[in-house]
Image (cartoon, rainbow, N blue to C red):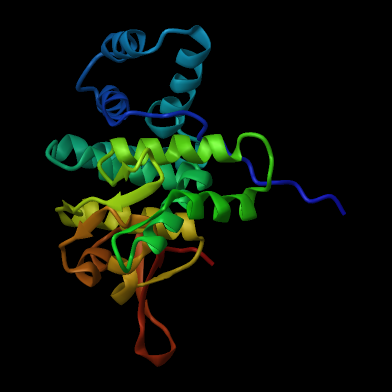
Length: 240
């Protein structure tokens, strides 16, 4: 039996202002020309421009068919409340679109949970265990770490050898919080405990200050149910 290594997909350093520009285009708040000019001013080669556009398309401009409706709801949240953190919305799209991005985030979140920092070498080791000792795993892990640093999640110190958590960014608004919870459920592929959502490594850069049970219960796309032992969990509504 031949084991196929998981696909990486997220293979570029992506700045938050590029992703925000793509979100604003999708929301109808700016023109595509503005995003093109931003890419032109920050990229020197045509291949680099094309690869960056591919990632931005997947995140906001042309999501995967199964994520179009989810992305549209994220865009609407931004339209209704432009002060919503673009980093939180783009993080939600990144973990649902690119499992590689999500896995790096999950590992960093877990390793930095106790002391607030970790060695980047440990992240690379664990990603290699998952994705194999193939060309690109280390380089693409670095791309994601560099991107997450630019998005305000971590600081890379000692020439990138250590990763330090930055203070959490507060995500406000029931709809934004419920949408990000849904992103976690989609990434994990299973229900998540309401009491454990704040502790999920996958969303380590964010603090969800809304009453989570209330936000989930009021979502049209999530359901709140009680499992054995009285634990309340959030799941995608209607999923078998």
